[in-house]
Image 1: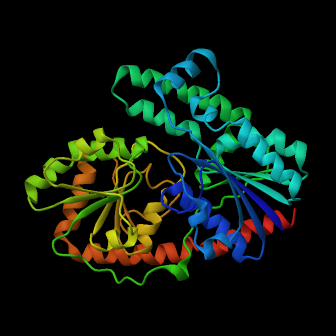
Image 2: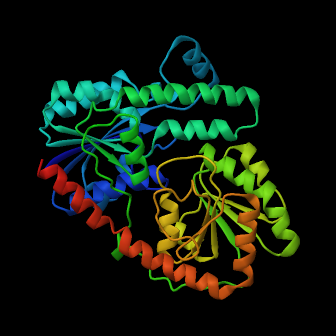
Image 3: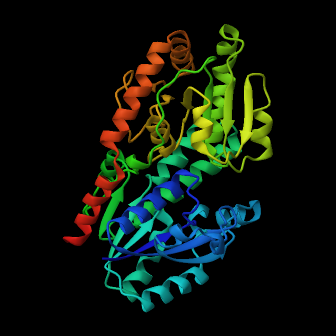
Length: 400
C-alpha cells in the first residue's frame, strides 16, 4: 500500500510520547513492506533539521516538512478567546501554508490510506477528500477534551481554571464535530475507543496501542540498586507532567524523606520552563534536564513514578520502563491503556498516602522490586509487541 502519514510535529527524533507513537508506526509500516510518505509540521518547539537525518531513518519514508511556529502566546490566546469559537489548541495547527503543502503531495502521489496523527489534523479532512480517494484513518492519541477537563479540575488558580474549563468545552465541541468525518478511527486504548463510541463514533474502530519493538530492547537484568532511588522521565513542558510532579513533591516526598533521609527523586525531561525548575529545587530532588539516552538514565534508578492527575491516551514511558525491568508506580490515569495487574506488573496509587505507602513497601522489600520488574518485562513483551499490533492494523487497511 501507499500510505500518507500526516503529523502535527516532526516524528524524529522520537523523544516524547507523541513522537514515539508516530515514529513506531512509520517504522512498522516500512518494515511491513509498504511505501510511506510523511507530511509533518516542523514546529519551533520540536524543530528538527531534516538534512541531519541519519540515512537509515531517511530511508523509512519520503519526509516532507513545513516550518511553523505554533508557540503559545498570551496575546493570541486572548484574541482566540474573544473572537473565535475554535479551541486555541486547534487554531495553532490550522495553516494555509500547510494546506498548500499537503495539497501538493496529494496531487503528486496516489495513496491508499491517509493516516492523521492527532485530532487537530482532522481539520484537513475536507482537503484530503477533495484531492484523494484514499481511505482516511484518524489515529486518536487520546480523547483530547478529557485532558483539558481533568487539568481544569485539578487547577487551584481560579482564573486559570475558568480558562481551562472554557478551553475544554471548545475542544469537546471541536472533537465531536470531527466524529465520523474519517473512514476509520484508531484509538490507542480500548477505554478511548469506548469513549468515542459513547459520544457518537459509528465508523470502524481499531485499537492500536503504541507498542515496543521487542527485539530492539536492551538486555537488562532486573537489579535493585543500593540505595533505591526514584525517577521521573517525561516532557516537562506538558502541563499534566508538571502538575503531577508538583503534587508528588508537595504531598509525598516530605513524608518519604522523613522515613528515608537518603531517598532521592531524579527528574529528567526536555523543555522545562523556569518555574518548574524552581519547584524542583528542594531537598531530595535531583534535576537532570534532558538526558541523551533514556535507557541509560533508567538503568541508574529503581522505581519510576508517574503521578498523573490529568492526561489521556497511554504513557509510552511506562511501557519503556516496564520493558527495561523497572518498577512502576502510577496513578490510574497515568496507567490508562496498560492493563497490567496491580501489585504484580506495576503498582497503582491514586492518593498521596497510597503513593507513599507503595514506595515505603518497595524500599523495605527488595525482593518485591525484583519480582515486579521481572513481571513488567514479561508483560510488555507479550502484550505490546509493536510488529504484531501493526500487522493487525495494516491488515484492516488492506482488506477493506
